[in-house]
Image (tube, rainbow, N blue to C red; front, side, top):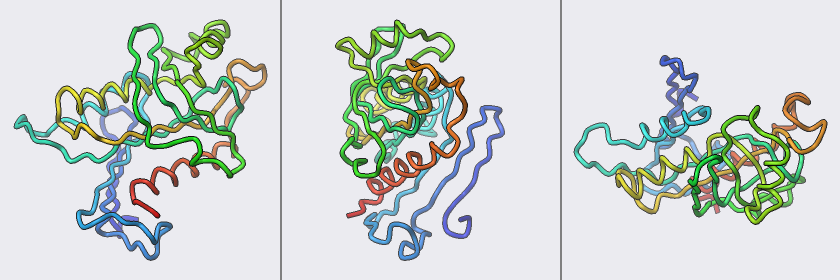
Length: 233
């Protein structure tokens, strides 16, 4: 990979967030999984960051989307794509969730956005897919079934819970709509695969790891994100 445009940046700060940079100008598309990629004359650079933890998500994306110098430079960021694992309130481990909004638990902060990914894009792969609002919780140990049932069964219509979504979106919206360091029409993509169902006995986080169950949804989400980035027809 390092011979074809990948630069690896191991974490040295103690955040445990490693970074990889991919220069698509150095890729041989004919030998790739996306031979019909259409990336245009200006070859994009892809930055891949390890997943953050809780409010750390805001700090990482906020720093990434700041100009290096304070000269009002507009960073040409085409899109931000986020894949994570989350608790699901309707399905089971290995299912996929496509959020339409993030609700920040314990605050009045709600983040609605247009998700470039849609549930129908994932159909036909023997994986159940759910679309709707998701709640960003303060921590897994702070949850109880009454609260989660309220979010799921009321008009909030929450399909799952995770810990970073609203923080990611807060940083993206701040950069695009207020600080204007990235384009206003920056595309966003969110998709999660289910690690557990906290409402069902035997399917909570305490019931064990994902094992191979998480492999297929992880790869499927990755492929769908890359198909959009590379304009695969």
